Image 1 (cartoon, helix red, strand yellow):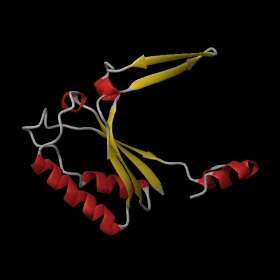
Image 2 (cartoon, one colour):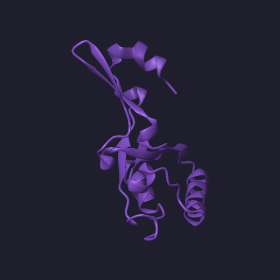
Image 3 (cartoon, one colour):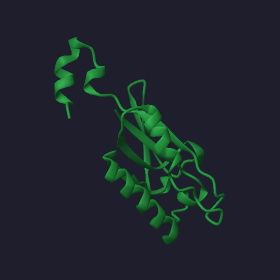
Length: 135
């Protein structure tokens, strides 16, 4: 089962402030443990929304809105994709993520876990779609 693990943005990440070298070293150890366990698929950090855009499709029209976006708590700052046995395994791994130190912003973070659809989740009548996206 694959899961998308989303790290929510905060004021520092939206300001483009990178984590301290000490915190990055802790995260590297955590990522290495994921890799050694065979759970790692990918991971990336995202630039602030000030460097992004949103595209909205509504009633046949397309509207592009440049960042930054006001609701920081609704923005993703980075993500992993993990391949684990269950949602509980994903939760257990998330609990092991190094907590941000108090000196870095609020010392708080929020992480969302979402299961990724697999080709087996599609009904048989969509076999062509299933085959197109098969890993």
